[in-house]
Length: 193
Image (cartoon, rainbow, N blue to C red; front, side):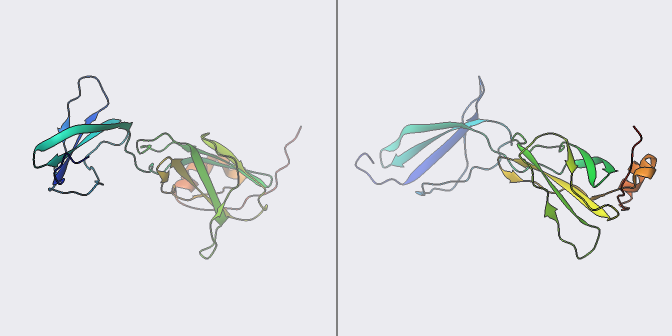
């Protein structure tokens, strides 16, 4: 119902969904469009919104919606350890410095042979927020690179820096070799009982 007069503008206001928050009018040009992108919000903060229409008599009652939370993709995780074993590699990583305002729901793991022309392959597994995974089966004696991406409701974030597999016999040099981006071969290891 336009009240008998043509709609000439809409006013949009927002406020944080917290006690004591006050309404702020979003500064936009006069418009009869029924969609608007409200910018300048803080990712991870819940907001309420309200809209009122204007006709020649003035602004009408507001329509309220919310709360809703703006967010973006998470930043990249950081791989911390790469431990090779027999036909497998155990990875651990740190969570992203920023979750983009939305809870992390999964980590995607990719690997490839250490070759400039090799393509990344996603490791198939159920969704998990664990900060560790075992990648198997792999081919003993083959060099691999690994990377991890975080997923939140906004989508998949950027991948971590690629981290190489390392030789089990040289575990003490893991951190140094990983930071240098050096890849070495996995190998079959027999552990005494």
